Image (tube, rainbow, N blue to C red):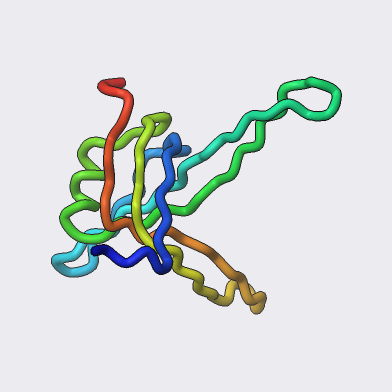
Length: 110
């Protein structure tokens, strides 16, 4: 049985085309996806809450992302949360990413 520790699944739409970089013989694709929840507030008004998620895909699956994924396309990703930090201009910054193990393209052709 696959471990559920540090496991996340999201369905959302790409905010931009994947950005692909090559490191030797290994590819890395990165992009963001938006997930939106809709609900009615106390006044009965529809409210939409959109969250943005940083997605990172390595290896042959990055090649699939590079070839087939485009801005606005709906995808389902499964992977793990990774937190990292870096320094920019003397300021420490923190980022959370989802390192993808599995990718499913949804919604048919665009």
